[in-house]
Image 1: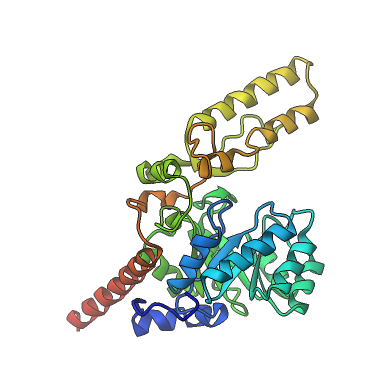
Image 2 (image 1 turned 30 degrees about the horizontal axis):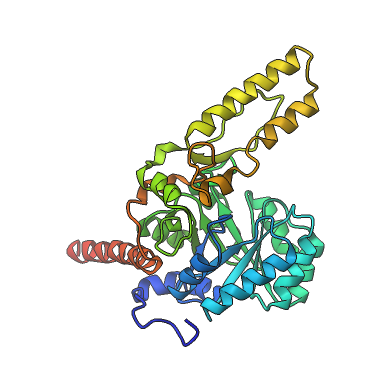
Length: 352
């Protein structure tokens, strides 16, 4: 709503507010809760809803060309006057042009994802007046990114949905939070309740990022079939894709297991057998494997094909048990964190 934030915003306790004060100041929001950028899901409606609820929505640009991104930014701004950011994939062939669109449209924060961000694009964004956020899977890379001018880091563990690294969120947090303190660091991957959010804040995180938890928000435009798959799933149902043969590497993607998951394994076996029989060369086989999932996420999210589509989801999918307004999801996270803080204070008081 352009005329100001809704009066029903649930405010955190002073203790919680103090823990994420740095993150809130960096984002310009009441709550240091980032919405994870999920292609086809994190579009104008959900992004605006997260920002209106006091968090920080992030548009997923995916493979959008520049002018489509411009239209999406403007459409989002028509729904909210609150801050939001844009996620750009560093492998996009028009990365610099996309960054220019964000700068033209006065986007305050740009998140660079999907690889190591080029130094010239970091400089381009900073020269244009926006803040740069980037993902770091290791402490050395995080330090390098900070030296290059990145304003904040996001560390995302293997519990997350979609493309994942090899290290869990809890281990990444221990590797990075105590040692990189000169910029805000936001933690992502497997966070589904306020107690977990609180734990990372107390370890030194400036805030958190959640994606899976927002898929079944009332404002999410994901197909009802896609949402039903999330509502039915338990944590163990969200598994990384399986690589059949090390000669043919597969980038791990965490998703809810379905028919396509099993078909992907069988397709790998078929293609590898063709290579071993001399009927297909290794390069062609690798391309065949990589192209298996082309368009699969859109089929699931937009078309509702949950059998042959990709159901990208984090292990926190087990906490998604009902469709709720975005504001309720965020309020629940805050209430859970504050309840944990209050219970601890009570135990201390009883103990003397």
